[in-house]
Length: 500
Image (cartoon, rainbow, N blue to C red; front, side):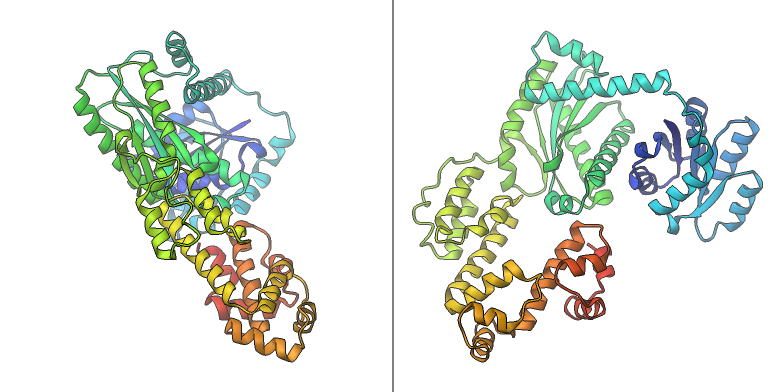
C-alpha cells in the first residue's frame, strides 16, 4: 500500500478527499491528515508517504513553506497542490519547487484525482509494490482487536475478569476515575442511506469516525474517547468516554452534556444530519460500563418518540407492548387515530398491529413505509397521507381504481389510453371522461407525472446516467423528458440531482 498524507486547513476539504475515492482499491492508504504545514511535516517525516496532497494557504506553515522544507530535507514523495482561483502566484512558485501538479479546489473530483494517480504514479504501480510496514501491520492488528472488543462489548459477552485485558489489547484504558457510554443515532438517516452506494456508506462511516476522533483528541482537560459503529445500516454509533482524573459524578455529567452538545453541532454542520444522543450514568469500572450499555441499547426503540437532542436513559419514554385502541383502529377518524398514536408510546410491533387493523382491507401495501419510519413526526405525516390516499381511492369509480393499479404496475411500458380502457372494459371516450372526472387530470398527464415521480426517486438513489434512468422509467424521447421534468419540477434533472 502506498501512503498518502493530506494537508489543508479546511476540515471539510480533508474529509472530502478521504472519502472521494476508494483509496485502498487503488493501492493507497490515508496515513494521516494535518490542518497546517507544521503538523504535515511531522507526519511526512514519520510516515514517508508516496503522495502528499497539500493546500497553499494554511496557518503556522503554509503550503509553499511545507514544500520548501520537504525539498530541503530531501524527503521523497509526489506532491499535488490544491489551490483557489486567487493563488496562481503561489502555484507558480510551487511549480518552481518541483511539485508534480496542481488542482483548483473547484475542480476537485474523483475523476481528476484518479487521473493524477494514473499519470504520476502509474510507473510505480506497475513496478514492485511497497511492502506494508511493521507499523501498518500493527495498526491493522489493533483495529481488528478494537473491532472484536466493541462487538463483544455491545453483546455484553465479556466477563468482569476478561474486560480489562480485552480493553488493554484494544488500546483502551484499563483503569480510570469514571467512564460513560453514549449512543449516537443519526436522525434522517434512512433518506440519506438510500442515496449511498456501499462504497459511499463505507466512506461516510470513515468520515464520521474521524470527525468524532478528531473532536475528542482536541478536548481539554484530557479525555480519552473511542467511537465505533453499532448498526451502520440504522445510522447508530457508540461512544465510550474515559476520564482519567478523579472528579465528581456531577462534574462528569456536566462535562458529558457539553461534549455531546458540541458533537451535535459538528454533525449538523459537516453532515447536515441531527443527532439523538443517549448518555449512561458515569461508571467506575468496565463491567459496570458494559452493563450500562446493555440497558441503554435495550431502550433504543424509545428513540422513535424523541426529538433530536441529548437524553439520559431515564428520560426516555417507557413503551407499551399493546395498545388498548387496536380493535377500534379501523373505525377511528384519521386525526383521532394520529392523536392516540402520538400520546401512547408503543413498541414497533404494537404500532404495526395498529396499522394492520387500520389497513386490513387490502391496503397493506401502505404498511412498509409506515413501519420503517424513523421518528414519530415522519410516521404521523406518512400515516395521514396513507389514510387520505386510501380514502380517496375508496371514493373512486371501481374502473378507475382498476386502471390506477394497472398504471402503477406497468407505467414503464408504452401504455396507451385505449389499451387501459380495454383492460377495464370501458369505451375509450367514456374512460377518458371518467378518468379525468375522478383524478382531476387526464390520462396522459397522470401517466407522465407518475413516471417523473419514479425518475426523481431513481435520481436520488442511483449514479446512472440521467438518460438511462429516463429510459428505464418509460421515457423514450429524452429531449421531451427534459422539457417535461423542468416544467413539472421547476429544475433540470441535473439540478435536481445536485441539490438533495
